Length: 241
Image (cartoon, rainbow, N blue to C red; front, side, top):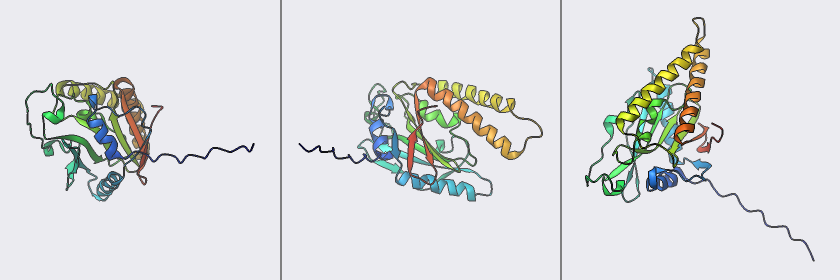
């Protein structure tokens, strides 16, 4: 009898960012499926690159951001023109209409659309800051609650989703946490900063402090970080955070 080697299976393509956004948006707690290990950003990777370049070309190195909405019937709507600024740069641009005031119902029975993600750029190599997580941490009952947070640094694309154990904060609770985390980050940076330090050294300290704090947050609050090279549309789950 002749031995026959099993055919090698072709690796499955990475699910698209659109697919994961929609799947998470209609899942309890807006949680990403736990088995996802890689995501193809597709056209949203191109948006990351464009926002990144706009920041690098800007004399003031400002942040640029775009909203991505998810409609009740499962469509994605991308903001046409980027918003410029810092921090919660698109907060004034969010436009969501209520169709029902019963907040115990699923979001698609309460509002006409929801925030899928906010894609924005960072002028320096630092991950998502505490204030970047504001909408992601909000409870399902808040019309501004988002499914994911997306950051384009000069070198990387970073996407953060919610896990099943992610919190359901009110806006007051989220703001309290953010103020606490910002204080912790400032203390981390100050601990390793000296008067004679160079600018590149200071930026590296800031980046390390940002990642150290982000790791602490995602471990405690069950968030899922995906990261990849800025020149690629693929992002991988960071399993050791």
